[in-house]
Length: 348
Image 1 (spheres, rainbow, N blue to C red):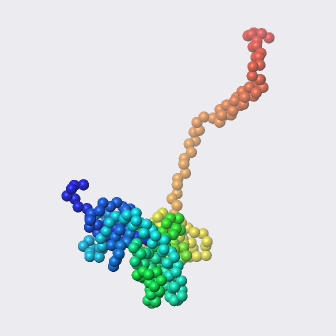
Image 2 (cartoon, helix red, strand yellow):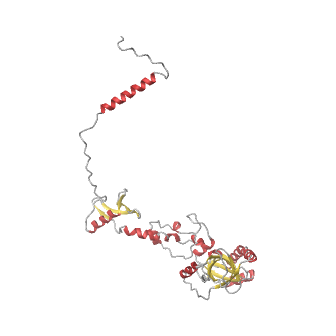
Image 3 (cartoon, rainbow, N blue to C red):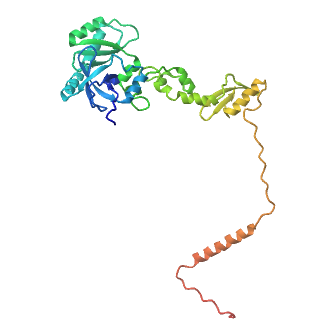
């Protein structure tokens, strides 16, 4: 890189539970992705995180999340974490499970309709962030007093959605891989049942719901491909009118452009191409009733048989007889047996 080149001075830092924030590298520290750094915490104190992104990619990420580069809310990186900083941070993290279980017991005692999902201590152990989910508004002022008196820290409550809760807890999805929300997915887009309808999925809430209890985020991944393929599939709003009765649509193979119909009272399904279904719909629009769902078969001309047959079948019979006689002769005489001398010509 040229000496005059100045890299982007904002770095993306990752904290517990996949939470990511932007910090300014004012001292131009030589950072590498994965390095542990000490950053300025909200309010007062310091916290420890790991570098997840640096360089011009951070500028693109900020533009995607609509965060201005000159924002005053962007805090600074203090220093590269030392082994003592990492030991203090690890000791604080060991306290989080016990704090969460004790806080859940307090929630049960106060009979609050909320669910504590995770606790995150600040690295200097001056502040604790409690993540919870609730359907309605909750008055947790008494809970904050009890938590502050027992753990001697500043308490901050932060409400998260059920999808964010599943991302913080983590787990294995039905696909056998780790949950997308806990690995790479940060923006949770709305998922509706129309996405399942376009993909011809059964509207079973137990199969369509993820571990968060909401519709799976992966229903949106292939939705665009299905919408493009559906452009070539005719829309069948009403059953096809045939001379044998009404033919109802039973199944559609979107990518192969095939549709199955069954006449009312008949259990046999008829497979039709999408182009054929378009023709039948046009016939119904003109008021014509369809005699047969299948297209008319084209008569294939029978092949001409030549009257002249080359060769004779008798030749084949003669060849088979001669070969069988030779094999019998070989079987009758053992190997190495003396051959009888041939009589001279003219002998009786």
